[in-house]
Image (spheres, rainbow, N blue to C red):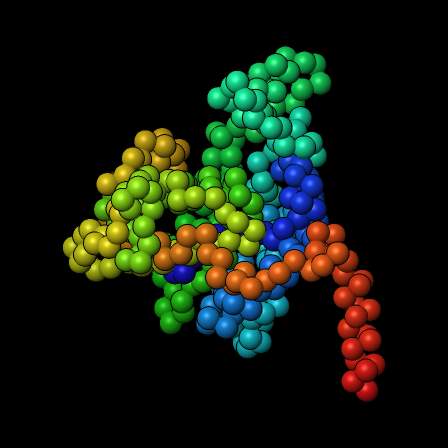
Length: 303
């Protein structure tokens, strides 16, 4: 199985520096260009999806739809749709939804949001941020109901290729859940990758997702006792796994040691090289009607 964890393109709230957890913030013109670049890059690299999952918020759905639109049309893609799932929504920022990022106070080691929360969490109108435990429950549910069956079942004659398009915070939590189902010594970085100081750090924290950045994973089952340990790069047991061990306790299953995972790309952004912001409109909300008008005039000129 090949697995891609992908963040959506740039949104209006990203540009305005607003918290947009469960708010349905639209893609900007730049965000649409990012999604199209990613779709073209992966499509021309030979990636052929068999399953596409996405948060049901429009910024994720539109990014996922761009991936499908760039796929070659053949029998294997007929009927393939974006499976929109509320469980893949971003962390709910509660009181902070739609509000500006709070700057860190100079005399405090807390973030601006945490400091603000400390002073206002007892206010009657205050709605707290979704907890990590709640997010883990959601990602574990997705893992059990949607991803584990694809990993565990046989697919003779077919390579399973899965794209999951979601949001930065929930993707980080989903990665921890995925890491939690693998046995020690079965997770490794590709030889050309390194993380942390000296290439050794917790695999739980591989870094954030840029707009349309992606994590590429290769999951394979080996014959019993063949390659019992992942040889390349940093293995899970070499790095701190306390958070992953806690997640393991809440997961419905652990994969056998014969199932290995190779981390091939972290926050992939090759597709964004050379992409410049559209002058004047790049940060504006994308208008699908505008594209239809542009397409009409292009056709008229061609005729």
